[in-house]
Length: 394
Image (tube, rainbow, N blue to C red; front, side, top):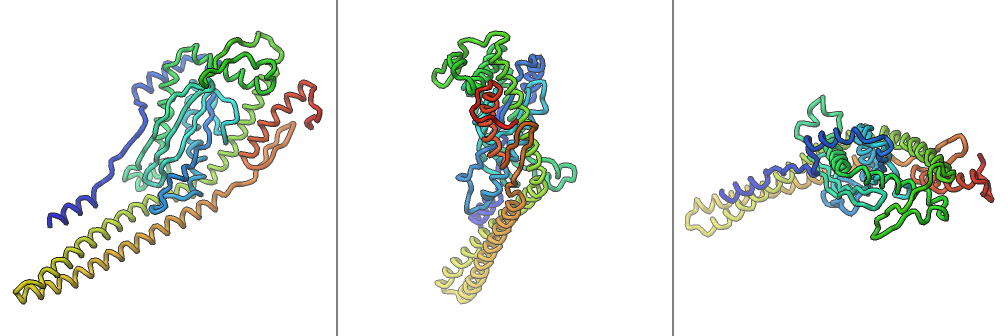
């Protein structure tokens, strides 16, 4: 009986809720107040790279998710981080989701999904700036409150919004610790590294690199016509990033309803799965103990004890069989989870998109367009310089 009680206690134990990240309300409020006085020209732009789906972290046995869902979540979570940063325009000049790290931005956010289902989200996030300075790497974890999916007021909200809040809090707190000269250095390095792409022969010696850290040795002169042309190209680059976000927003709009339903259903299925497995273990243990007790009773000199033993063996066998039946039911729930995932995957299959501007057209997926744009900017610069051998059609 004591053994059974201990096993039952272990089966019914509840997980400890973990909320990673170091942001606090008081620190965030202080940092926000300080940074609200930051001059507009010093406000950093932020690029949130589409997260690594973390396929290698998927548990094939539990099937808490599938690669198809992880691919979608890698975009969805990045967009949510972006939206949270956009709530503070007095701190961040702009925030964009980007497919990869090939662009030039003041601050870069990257990360990997470590765990994600309707019950728990865990993401590892790294933040650095264009000078090569590493801000921090932290793991953010949140579990859904038991009442979230049952509460009509909260059901339609993101159950993991606190993760995005803590990421924004930690980024704000780090930026607040920087001196104005350090933030200015970030902005200057960002501009020169962008200019160096087009005219390395002019700006190749404006920066030094030591141990991966970029430092400005000199700045372009005021009124420098070359840097002015580069700045015009960068304005177009930011416009392109703005238009790129429309595609991510459309993707998330298509994803939102089926993904929210999947999260809810996944949560329900996970809870039911735990319940079935717990019942299977309990019944299996009790059945096994009954069988053992029945076998031992067969050695008794008492006929009544032997008879009870036979009954115990039979009852124990039924309990074990019942446990196997519960395991079979758990497998059914796992199959349902997989079916939900496959349905979501078909709903959010990649779409072919086009991006039209007044001067050119690029087509393909968001990732393909982004790469085409990186190449096209150099051609546009050459056209404006009058040096292109094969002019771009304008």
